[in-house]
Length: 631
Image 1 (cartoon, rainbow, N blue to C red):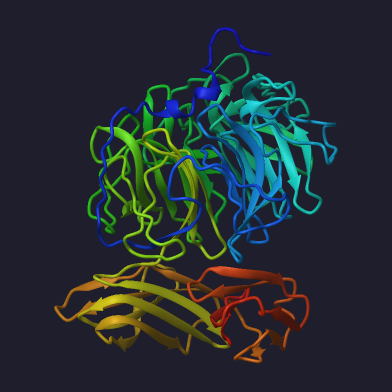
Image 2: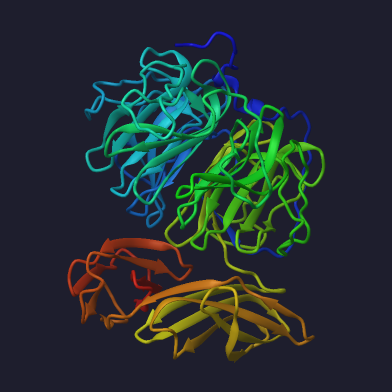
């Protein structure tokens, strides 16, 4: 049913309406960063078309076309999946692509190579080769624990070819390459059926919407929050929180209002309360942390662009206003690049967010406010530490509409920076690197470039990568420096909780150039988490700390690899069974995963013949990392 009293904007033209930009300011702040960007794939020019080649076959020439509002996820195999999006010129897509980081090739997996296709729904709950979601953008997506790809809602084409706000839920089985229409309606602009709050029911269903954010919890349930679309009887900016249980196929209305355009109920900053609630909004960022809490940042509300950060505790069922302002349209407070401060906060914006393995919140770019009251499109990178309750401006410009700098494809440098963009896709890989793809520029152009950000700490006047591995009863720390100048030495510090650190050793510095260092902790804890950081001291007495690195020890199984050096492959030999049925990842010298496989026996063979010669690291689930030389 279509609500009558509130007229929602036509979603087909709604995305660029996130910001009305009719000016151009180009700015790039060159400064030390806490990581390196790499332009990985795609074009460094705007509005490039797709190159589809043969469906199901990866090729170096394949590439999804320029677009925004696509969804992106990392699958269980380590490949990346992107679906749909729009080019902003009347063309919406339903093509599904996967990217293999090991080969650098894109594969067109499913969907049409033409625009604006209607959905083919088939029978609800039944997979079929002919099934296919309609073309759309601004949908939510997930990758489940079996590697299947799920999408929900968005703006696009229903089963009749009509355009509107969708509430259909689909699953793509990556093993059979078939879509299943799981839940929701095959027609656009459907109202929500809320039922009783907290109670799952067969009739429950969120209303059609786009630019909601979604995530998956540790139990495999899918969650969505907010968006622009239809409530129970009307429509507008939503703040409802829903959970879908794939096992039962049922939706539950968890929190928020069944009526749109609700103001926020902030309570006291930092204090959870059952009455707390973010305002209705869309195009906010959302992500789950390792503890199972859900985080929401920014978005566009009925009163304007927001920069408030919220945390939802599933166990308590309570929201906490964590950071940012309860009012709209605030400029950012950047402080000093790379330095956390309690006064720092990103400007109000529409944006994506991610979480890292330590539970820190990261956000990149978006449409909104930089350091002034001028709106535009951003390319700044921020990190929020929940333990310190502080934001850090990590990288990028503090002004809007930056042109960025691509550098050389495949090469990480400190000068690389993606151009400003909004409504891009983003995800985190197994190694903890952040990936950003596509999006829309300040001029309304669209991109199809793929970028990787490796969040390595860059110490004063030098680039430095701190890595660690458990080998037997020792922890081996390694780091690299780039353009080292006047460095006196490094102090290795260790902690059991990531907060209180003590010195455990010193390493003298070479002082100039690009160098490799290592330190062996010969007496780490037998099991549990252990944290490390480096204190860099220069010859003038200045001191800078690296970011914190965490290793987990669960006791150890003795492991060895032979032959090493290797020519075509290696065999992993283990004297125990604790690592059986766990994944092993092969990383290159930059820490990027190039392959992954499950350990099924106490002798496990790894095929290396397709890899170039050089240094690799075999990373096991217990934290053990073995250095391998491929000849």
